[in-house]
Length: 636
Image (cartoon, rainbow, N blue to C red; front, top):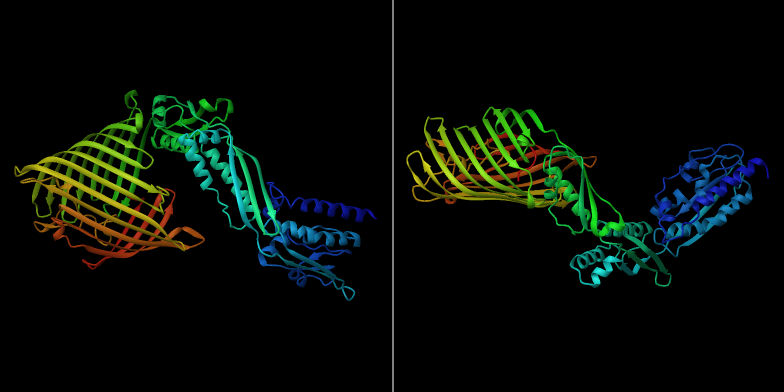
């Protein structure tokens, strides 16, 4: 053999090594790795030797090429064989010549390699035949025909899924956490009896099952053994899996790095769980998110120390960087509701050295000018914070101007899904119509506000719901010496639902009522109006309500509803959506007097990282006019 032939033989041997090991079903590499490997292009080599090419490539190349390969198989399997079969991959190697003995070896090995590759797709009894036809004339290529009949894909006949270690012992002892964890782990196994078998899904199922154990607090869980046993007679695969859960990691201590000015007790309060709590992945992620939500830190990382010897008293490591102590923020903006505006906001994250934060914001706009200030303590036990705050707001509409002042003292709780606020409030408002009529009222009330969320994403929801409820009771006094008790209720329910084929639905119901006793009046800011971006589109902000002294006023009741259907414009631009919608609603002095105003239109949505940006063109049926609306974010 010449040096050139020797080099070619070494290359072919290397290719044979690449194709080996494809038949193992219980291992993580082999066919799974081969099936995920990047395809090697089927190139041809010029010279005094020959090349392996597909029929399509042969038609585009010189007729002096040596070998033409034809694979007859279902399209998906044909693509698999063309990517990984040595007989085809030989064409990607540059060489001058290959002798007949090497060529014969490749042909002889092809059927076995085909069977090994098809096993990765769940075909264990394929019919494979290969035929070589020499070129009939000089310069014509040899032809190799590979015919593959894969048969029926094997199905899973039985699954044996077991666990050893602390999880099994806890389940046997009827420990609630172990029992719940094991039951949910078994129920989550994706490859059910009767489902089709593929090596790729088998590997994914094993990796996912192990990840779920580790996420549940068994951080060192591993497989003791896994296997797939094929029964050729029934064309079924029996799966065997045994996992060792290892110890359950329970919270022993929280170690914090990066604190400079803030208190470590604040971070312990945010954790909100006692020692001995299982350290699950959910706990770590929720803890990290709660720290970020506190607004005191910039970068936060929460991890578990996986020391098996300390599993019963595990360390949770919190590494963070504090946010600046004081921040000034300026802004310019525009709203379809209130026009252009400018704002300045000051945040102080440790007021005079105490574990409290303050926020003051001044905004000056075309139709709205206001100041809002609040001082709140840092999170205490169960995420509660005490607060004191105030607001002064001057709000103009097409028919009147309302000046209101509020002072509140309360307590709030923010959790992953629920926000609660209890507070007492003193509120005064003065309303001046465009005709010069002026009224005022003062109220003292006890209130509760709550928000419940169950969403796939708080920023960009597509499935789930939010519910906001408000309730309050109090006593008020008007400018005409009217004095009496009152109550106030408000609710807003918003639902999100995927509708298939990239369509998404959204619906909202909103209602409110003020209950007035004899001779009672309330500040205008406690009553209701409708119209605007998050109410009834097609009408200007706060333009829907009862007529009072020839101008639109605020009503004792309010009701609005909205239905919207949206989808991406193009699959290549999933963040840009189009939408159609219908809104209806109004405010009145009573529900019997409420006549819904209807708005309908079309819009564009850009699902940005900070929330959806919405631009809507809406037609107001009652005013017979079109109006443009735009807003950012979602309302809870």
